[in-house]
Image 1 (cartoon, one colour):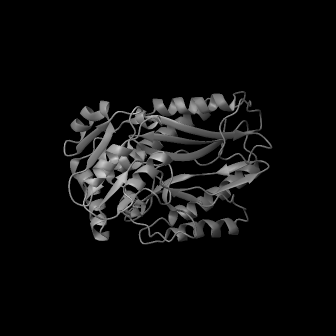
Image 2 (cartoon, helix red, strand yellow):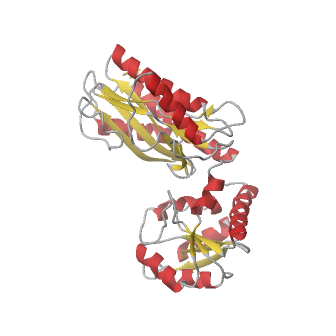
Image 3 (cartoon, helix red, strand yellow):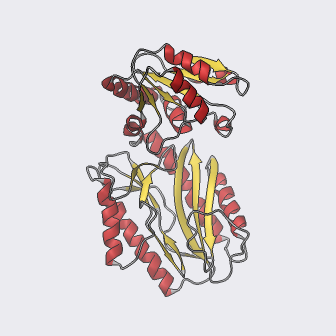
Length: 378
């Protein structure tokens, strides 16, 4: 993102303070999102390969360390001059030995790993086990909570990237639906959505989930098929796009022909339930209350929502992040948090959802997704 040095320093200082307060020695970060969050170094192509691992080691006190394939050393030194850069030569050489050597040079104390909820390490199981065995005198702690404390609250630069991704998604839906959906395959429509999003400024079209046709309106997380959208079908799509590493994730739907009264009613009810959640996204509100507000409005409207574990989620450098929009999540909302609100209804006549990406501010919630929520006649 070419962040201001002060923002990167703020992120690093927050993690260091948390490590120091707990008496932990350091944190080992190997997930793409955490690596990017603390370094702002974009090595997109490397993360698609399981042949190489990248690691960022943050001590409670002292400079940040980077462990990278040799050919990235010059880029890393140029992009993050304050880091201590270590190299190894994968896939011939494994990451275990150089990582253990770095950890042995750290101060005594537990080591933080990405082992908690909504975290994934960028190491193989064997590599992680070997490093743990070699550092068996050091307790392993979950550093995920420390990271989410900072990552959940987005800076203005992060919000701008999230908004850019959402704007690209809005432009894609509007352009593709304007061209009509009848007579086109789901695969062609998904490809068109991705292309239009890239033309509108997205850096990457990560995925398009979609469905259409009677008997298929339960498919809310499935990929496109070669099925042709026929007259009277709803074509529903959910897009995942990134801009400068930051995600958008929202859905819209079009009808191949006129929108019936029943369909307009069901979509309108889901829009109202979504709005109830959006309006609850205010500082000092438990996110559980956002979920409860959605459920109450859905009950008043007598609609049965899909049960897929939660009604939305945080979003940022990962497509889904804490907090969860669910009655069991007691996270307190604060300015800078960004959530999706996505109650959905599967009905024989269609899949109904009006997902929105919402920014918590000091006042009224900010809506990053500008595409119309009503069903589009296409």
